[in-house]
Image (tube, rainbow, N blue to C red; front, side):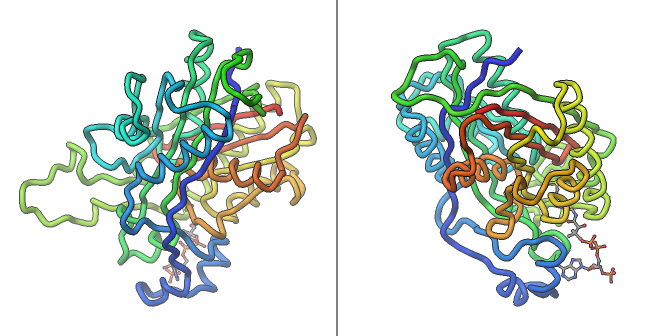
Amino acid sequence: NFSAQLRGVGAGIPQKVITNKDLEKIVDTTDEWIYTRTGIKERRVIDQELGTDLAVTAALQALNDAGIKAEQLTHIICATCTPDTYCPNNACIIAQKLNIKGQTALDINAGCSGFIYGLELVNALVSTNPNAVVLLVAVEILSLRSNWEDRTTCVLFGDGSGAGVFTHKDSKIGEKKGFANLIGLKLNSDGDLGQLLTIKGGGSAYPYKLNDKVGKEYFLEMEGREVFKHAVRSMTSICEELLTQMNLTGNDIDLFISHQANMRIIEAVGKQMNFSQEKIFSNVEKYGNTSAASIPIALKEAKEKKLIKENQKILLTTFGAGFTWGTALFQT
Ligand code: ACO
């Protein structure tokens, strides 16, 4: 039972670029190693700005794309595992920076799967309240949670934000029509595998005392090879399950947007799903892995490049810390 419609998309990308060549000066790595193993050439990182500043840029673009005003929002959901502060939540800070108040404002954390997980909440909200106007904005600042002494992880991540504005598909609010209806969604999780990808420090299981030195558990830690295998397996099987359930096959999909973690993961899933190259969108080369923000940033760029057209089926899929994973299908 799906009623959510995507009305507009936007992105907030920091200006500062760190290339693979720059990383050669920081850790024992090479541009060639990073590019052939991951498909990443450069990533963006914050300089003066905060995550919520990027989120506000993404939100304003998405609102503009939708022809909807910030004051018309009823709900703000921020997907992040790297908020500005634990309290207040990012959603309230974003509302304050958008100069609005009164909305339901909450953060969700499902690692890299935050945006796709958020779609279930969005759909439930607009189904029970057809007047709801929901901003789902994902933002991650992984540059401050990367261990810049660990070459196996620090080369992979970047900062960024992506946003979508959603209403009920029959809503008449706003100046423009929506462009994609949510028609399928499947989510999954497995906490048994959680220790393969963590940011522990600061949580109450790993408390810091005043004047403590920050240890490496403060930063992202990952068993890359294991995560790789699970990511490919889980995204492929959940996409297959959703398509089978909907009596569709890979041939029915016009555009495939996976979480942008690593080109080899994207290609491996695309290959197992039998998607031709033209159907697979990727921008991991420019931004690295921006966690929950990667899918809405990709959606915004695909729309800008006019790859999103009328009467298409767009399949999204994600995998992240938890582990969490999922897939969503949109019809334009
Ligand atoms: N530069 C040079 N050498 C490196 C680097 C680096 N940056 N990182 C690792 N190496 C070395 C390793 O030390 C190892 O050397 P050794 O054989 O002497 O021990 C060698 O390269 C091979 O290491 P592997 O880890 O086996 O390399 P692999 O080909 O598996 O690639 C990578 C590593 C890129 C991390 C890969 O496992 C991967 O992409 N995993 C998925 C990670 C990911 O995207 N996670 C996020 C998904 S979920 C989410 O977004 C939260």
